[in-house]
Each structure stands twice: as structure tokens, then as C-alpha cells.
Image 1 (cartoon, rainbow, N blue to C red):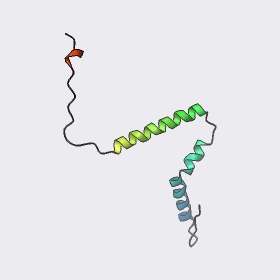
Image 2: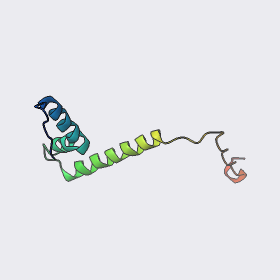
Image 3: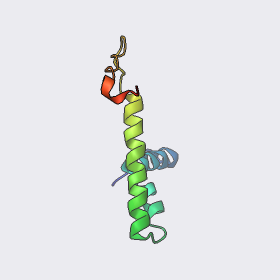
Image 4: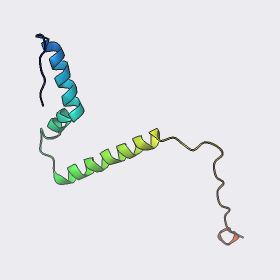
Length: 81
């Protein structure tokens, strides 16, 4: 990773560096690796993150418009007489 300082504008170079680090996910990775995490905890956290991503995708996906499909009728064998 390389950030160039142009015309001694260090503040802009720092902002660019922070943005690149954020996009790469480097800070999140450093925070995760700061402490040891047991394999069972790591697996559980991975499943939780996957579920969050799935829910986020479902929330973002466009829902089909129009009337909802009707439920199939229950057969008379399953009803109580």
C-alpha cells in the first residue's frame, strides 16, 4: 500500500490512508486478532456474521410486487371430525 504526499498536504494523505485501510478491512482484522479466540467461539462468530449478511441481503432484495400467492388448502384427512 502506498500513499503519496503531494505539496506537503499531510492531512489529505492521512485521510487517504485511513480510507484505504477501511476499504481493505485491515482495522477490523487487527481488532479481531488482538486477543486469542477459541476455535469454538470463532466458529460461532463466523456463523453469526454469515446470518447477518444473509438478513442484510434479504432486506435489500426487492420483494415481488402484486398479490401474495394463496396458501394450499388443507386436506380433509388432516382435519378433526
